[in-house]
Amino acid sequence: MNSQKELSYDRLASRTKFYQEKSLELEKKLLFAEDKIDQLEQQLKEALENDDLERQLETKENKVNQLQSELDQLKIEVSQSNLQAMEKKVQGFEELLEAIEKELNEKEKQIESYKSKIKSLEKRVKVQKYTPEEVETETEEKEQADYQLSSYFNYSVICKNDESYVIHGSFHMTNTGEKPLENPLVCFRFQPADYTNLKGKISSLEQSNINPEAQESIQWVYLDNEWAKEAKSRGEIWIASMYDFQIPVNHTISLTDFQIPIQKQFEDSVAVEAFVYFQKEDYRARAMNQISINF
Image (cartoon, rainbow, N blue to C red; front, side, top):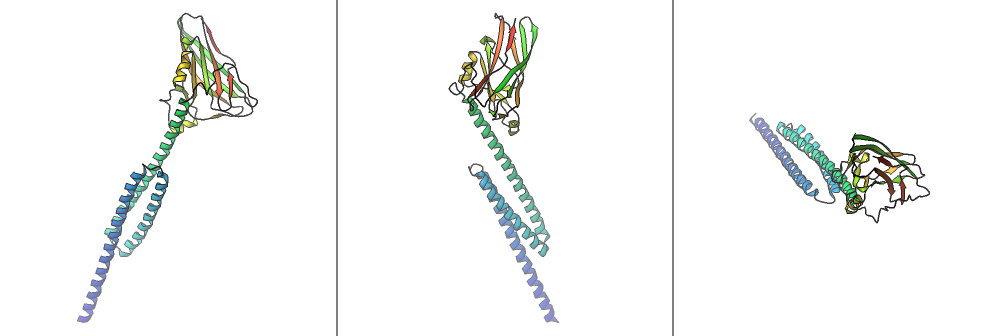
């Protein structure tokens, strides 16, 4: 009888030691996993300063998936050993993994945002570099066999008093040729030059929106480099699109709701002409009409 009790006690002690060792082993694995997560977080911070960030993020995601697989295995072992304390640690481990995955998603969004900002800044630099050597300022229309643009003003004049007027208008451009036209540069020429002023849905390069969603609509900006400033002194205002776009055949784009304030001085009349230039196609066209006011 005593022999059986001793045998049962030995088996119980052996089983207790087994579960203690198993619990210790699982805690070591969890500690190791937590260390790995700390290392991953540190590596993620360093990866943001590296040119191959996307490739490193993919590697980290694979490691997270591997840790997730190990976590699933740990769940099975915890279930088999029926250790409630270990289950709580596993739950905390899951929350930590979820936080890491959330952080990874946020970093990926930041990367896409940085890419978009870089493209917008590159476009600003491109627009800023327009020079007289690149854009011909001749008034004659240069015709091309496959390119044809029909453009015109639609405007009205509001008289505030005998000395003050405001021109409200839109400028419309229709591709009547056989091929698309890309990235128009629009020049408004004022005569006399003292009245050179144009307001409306046009912003400076510094004010232009770098949000990627803004690329879905035409965003007009003033050219404000040294050449453009010199052009303004002779009565010309140049505008371009912040982002690249095409005017398809038989399609019309418009610069809408612009205003030209006029303060009457000594002249008897004010005229505004418009010219549209396409550098890639080496094509330029004059508007079919002009704005004209006689005081």
